[in-house]
Amino acid sequence: DFCLSRGLGDVYKRQGSNIAYKCDAKGKSTATKISIYLYLQEYSNGAWSNVDVVTKAVNGRSAYVSDTYSSAVSGRKYRTEAHVYVYSGSKYEYLEVNSGTLIF
Image (spheres, rainbow, N blue to C red):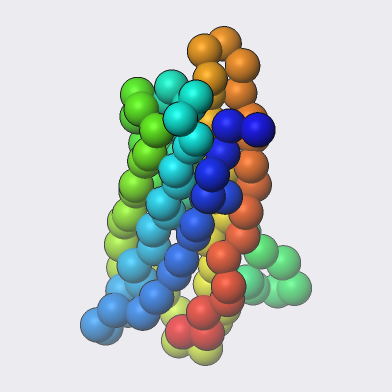
């Protein structure tokens, strides 16, 4: 178990049609690298689909990534899905975590 906080994803509304989204992941003292693949998802026609993605890889115990999506549609639901890899040498732990839902 290399992970201390489980890929904390969040999504929130900005001005106009913009959505900001982020993820913060922190590893334990044995963590040597963290990779984040953070997807922004939109709910439409009964299913969640990826509309944007941002990635980051950091040598160390913590990683933070954020981005802005500028094509949000009023009335639709949005969330993040974070895929986080926390490495300790050649071993790794994989986490997949969804944020809460934002109704834009």
